[in-house]
Structure formats: structure tokens, C-alpha cells
Image 1: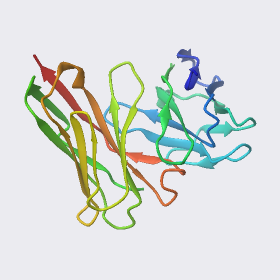
Image 2: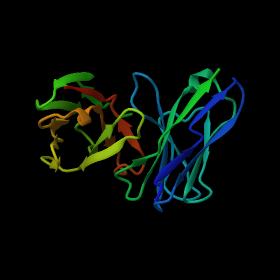
Image 3: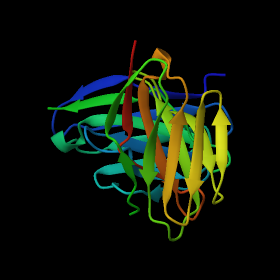
Length: 111
Length: 114
């Protein structure tokens, strides 16, 4: 039981490049989330999903897209990366909509 | 957007001492309050979820209380140990209880000095 895993662990992008961050969970959770962590800020919600095939915007959705084609996976896409998207990205999942279980994070640097 | 405030921002405590810190939040439209423990280079780990005014939860030497009428929660650590060093996050769940995501405070960074 791996819990929540994230791929990749670290990535460097040039401005304008695109990439997809993958989150996978093996706990059969309905709810999944993407947060970003920046210095001096709390974790901020980017997008979330309350079930397979559904997604919704969080607090800071601009510049990101998400997809939940399979229940166990939640993908976060950056179509045209900007330096402001340099951050640590955390995925989380929840079965009940209460306690969230976090992945190890993806560190992204946009030059 | 909910405003979740945590204080102090950082705290140095001698090993063996007890300590506590605060999470403040809007008292209106309260649904759930979460505490997480976040060690460096690891993922945030859930400690407690509290929903009722007057709730008290305990896990080993760590406990938490909730006052929804005045909009605060305290986290207590009794007899601090070096392994308690971490950032402690407080988060509010919205009307979905947390299903629609959590609003986090900036955390209290706790350092236990041997």
C-alpha cells in the first residue's frame, strides 16, 4: 500500500514549456486535491476532484488544468509554464472528504 | 476565501517543557478544523479533525481543543521531545467538510532544543 505517490519528484522547466504532474493513490479515495506551497504562504488549493470525471477550481487555478479520467489518478497540467509557477506541488486524497493524505511533493523550478 | 491565522510563526522550546500554540479562524459558517504535522522533507500528516464546539482530541502527548464560538483552536504538546520538531498546520474545511479542499494557515514552526 503505497498511499499517495507523485511523479516526478523534481523538474526544471523553461518559461513556456508544458508538463504534467501525476498523482496516484491506491486507497480507493473519491476526493483528490492539488495544492502548492510557496515560502511564507500556507498550502493553497489549485484544483480538486470529488470523483472520477469531475474537477473543480480551488483558490489559485489560473495557469493550471487538471483531469481525473481514472479514480486513482489526478493529473495537473501546466500548458505554458511561468516563473511564478515555481513552487512545491502537493497532491492529497481523501476517502471521507475529511482527513487528507498527502503525497511527497513535486519540486518545480521554472526558469 | 477563509482567513486562518496561526501564532506564533516559530517557537523554540527546551526538551521536556510543555508548549502550546494557536489557530484562529472566522467563527461564522464553521464546519471542521484540521491539525497536521509536517516534518522537514516529508508530507503533512493528519493529527486531528474537530467539528464540535468544545471538542478535545488527544494523541499521545499531543492534544487539541476547539472553540467555534470565539474562533480558535489550541494545540498542546506535553513534555516536548526532539522528534516533536516540525511545522504544525491548522486548516479549515468548508461547507463540504473538506471535500472541496482545505484552507491552511501558514503554520507554527516548532524547534525542540535538547
